[in-house]
Image (cartoon, rainbow, N blue to C red; front, side):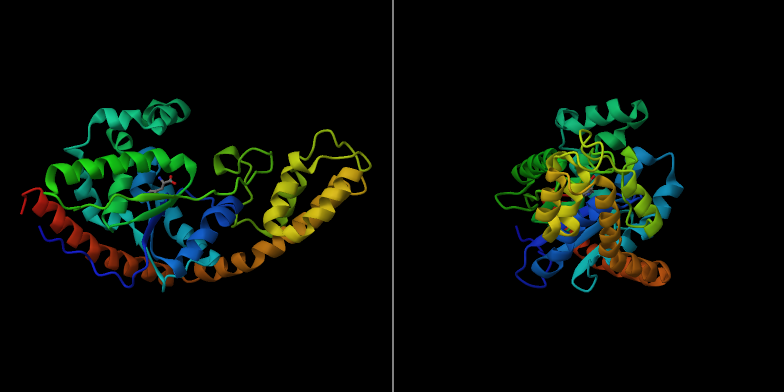
Length: 338
Ligand code: TRP
C-alpha cells in the first residue's frame, strides 16, 4: 500500500517529546530536559507537546490548574531557549487525531499489556485509587499516539519512561503485523535514553515539585537564596573547620551545573575544612541566581506577552494537525475504514 508520508523539512530525524502541564518547572527540568530540547531544535525536526490530556489522567479534579499551567509551561520552554522557529510546539488536546488514533489502537491493545506497565500499579499505590481510571490505564497508549501521530522516530525520555516506550513499540508491531500488509504504516519509536542528570533538591532527594524541595525557575532571587540557605549539606560537617564530604552534599552536586569550574576548589575547601557550609551556600546562591537570571528575564517577557505564546502554540498545533491527518488517512486505509 502507499503511505502518504508527510514531507520532512529536511533529512533530520523526527524527535518527539512532551511534558504534562502541572506547573512548577524547576532547575531539574532546566538542566535535564530543556537544555536537550533546545539542542534538538538544531539537530532534529523536533515536536514538543503540551500533554494536557495526560495531565487529566491524574489531575482531572483540577482542570483549572491544568489550564493555568499550559501557557506558563510554554513560556518557560521558550525562556529556556526552545526555538519555535526551528521546532514545533503543540497542544495535545487541540489535535483530535491523537484521541481518534487512541480509540483505534485501543481495539488491538490487550489490557494485560497496560496492566503490566509499572507506573499503573505504582501510581495507584502512590496517589490512591482515584487514579485507577480507564483513562489512566490508557496513559502509555495515549503517549504512543502522541508520538505516532507525527511519525516520531526518536523520543528523548528519562529512564522512568522507557517502559512506556517499550509498550508503545509492541503496539506498533502488532498494528503493522495485523494491518500493514508487509509495510510499516506506523513507525516504531526509539527511545533516546538521555542520561538526565540526577538533580538533587534542597533536601538531597531528587528535585521534584511533589517533594517540595525544588528551586523553581519562576522563583524570585530572594526565594532562591532562602531555599539555598535551607539546603542540607554533609550532616557530619557541623561547623566550619570540620572536614566535609562533597560527594554526599546536594549543594556541591548543584554546583556542577551552575559553575563546574569552581568544583575542584570547593571540594578541596570542603574536605580541608577551610570552606564552611554557610559561606559556600552564600556564594552558591549568588551564582545560581546569576545562572537563572537570563532565563527569568526572558520568562518575564513571555509572561507579559501571552498573545505571542498563544500564537506560537496555535501555529505549531496547525502544523501538527496537517501531519496528523495524513497519518490518520494511512491508519484508516490500513484498517479498511476508508
Ligand atoms: N509521559 C511523559 C512524562 O511524564 C510526558 C509525555 C506525554 C511524553 N506524551 C509524551 C513524553 C510523548 C514523550 C513522548 O514525562
